[in-house]
Image (cartoon, rainbow, N blue to C red; front, side, top):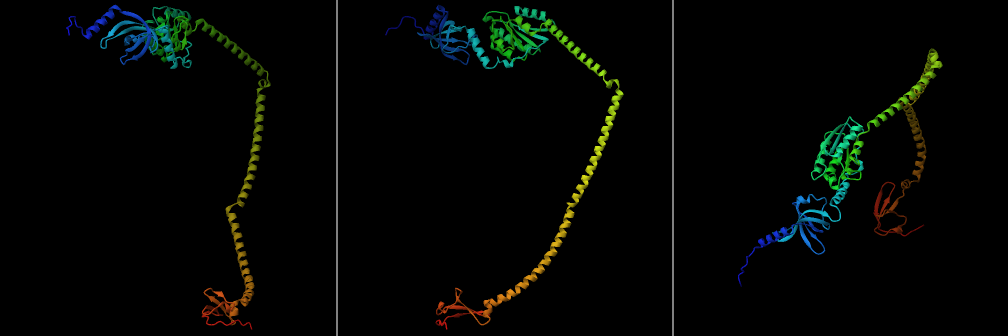
Length: 450
């Protein structure tokens, strides 16, 4: 094997040479393609692929550049991107490092506007129910705008022409550029804490890019969170910003905002004059009615002869008093009679009287019971004695006393009526007139009816 005579490069040297050639010969380019495999690292850098129908290239966009985009990249989105071709030396892959990117076919600003509008609307920042009314006569007006622009001059001219006695607080800010949005949001928060009655936030006309700070989320949220009523006056009448939707009222121009925030002095004076005339006519009408009633009352008999009216009222009072006394006396008599009747009824129903009467009835019943008992005993005894004698005469025991006897078969105890019911050695019990005896059958004689 022959030894190579040419210079031998390391892999790193070759990779750096290729990187230098790509960066120097190609440099910065614009590229069109579709985002694929979009990944956002924890560091905030984005790694993805740009591809078309025939090829693809790795792409990187670092955090600082990514945060300046006016839209949110995602896989599947067609974009125009600007960046430098380079090589990632560790893997030897060539890639493009992007500095800017915008949607293809749709302006990045417009796409960002629609996406943020949809998001904030879903959160309720544009709800009409939370809009605050403007004060009728504001004393302190806060203005957030550029101190050198046409907007502040227009606002001051309108306010001075309409109502000179107003205190104006201007918080100067930038109204375009990347630093404008944070300044505007901070100005709104500061004036909100300084007790202004109403606030105008806006600027004159310009392109979408010029007006963009008023579409930034930080400004929209500052308007939404302010407790002071805010009028948004951004651009011309045809221009709309997200600040317009979040504000309590939108004015087509800064001048129109000034007209809305203050009432015209002459218009207020005319209104006061109208109220004054209406009040005068009302008072005049009521005075005429009162004068008419006074004249009517002056011609009445009561006012012509007041002493007669007093006498009539005194007589009516005496009559009512006598009627009341009679009614009270009749009522007293009626109540007395009713009370006496109730007293008699109570006496009749008294427990003592009821008990006494019950005792008397009990004693009478006891005497009747004793008499009836003695009489009944005598009558029962007179009826019982003949019946006892008659029963004794018919008693079988009495017959036994005359010498007869009753024989019972043992152990059954059955009364014997015939000798045929017995057999030899049976036991019988014989009942005599006095006492009884037991015997054993030793012989049985045949029946002899004779």
